[in-house]
Image (cartoon, rainbow, N blue to C red):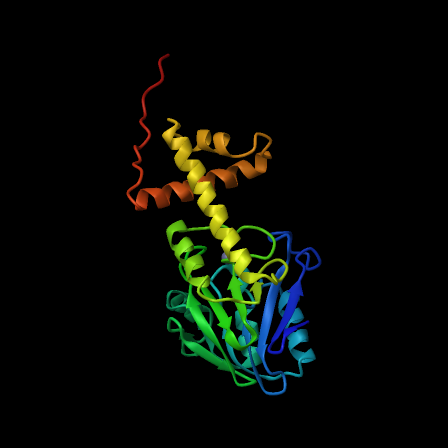
Length: 277
Ligand SMILES: [Zn+2]
């Protein structure tokens, strides 16, 4: 599907691919540039043969343009799975965050894995370029890409189409969202879920959502609650499904780690004692 003059997206529905539903909204692979000249590819999907074939079929539909780079948003398995076979088919360098270079260098010939510089512009066909934005938080090696002529922001897993994302380092994550607010995309193209036409609004919504969660946690702590489970009970809906409780607790811990890093709260390790017989 052509999204804007220089952006073509391939949607892979994970149900259809028989890969289980890790991301209910499916996954997106992007080709950017001019199919009559040169293009770059953003991410290479899961390692399933079926996925790689879907990407190669889409590449054939575009007329097999010269691929000048495969750009990686981050090193999670569903973003780099097909990288070896696609690199072989497209015979181009693979560009990624410096922190991901050693790992990709073990999967691929190290000479063709080239680190990105922060804010580097990667040229592609049609006389346009993508700016690499280092955006840690979901993962330390995360990169977003901004295509200014089309006002398209490729957000990887930092901002998703249909849900909120998992966060490894919340302080870094919030800084990355703030960095994205400096751009005004007409379209956010996430790695999972539907494309988001009102990009800036979606990014602000993510920031508001995290800030209000943080305020709830601070309020719970101020009320005298001290444990993660108790915080979950206090701030999440009573009827939270069993399976989601674990995710909620992880989310609360991420917030607590950020508050601790900022010196706003202290943590006392749990104490242990022999139970009375
Ligand atoms: Zn991810």
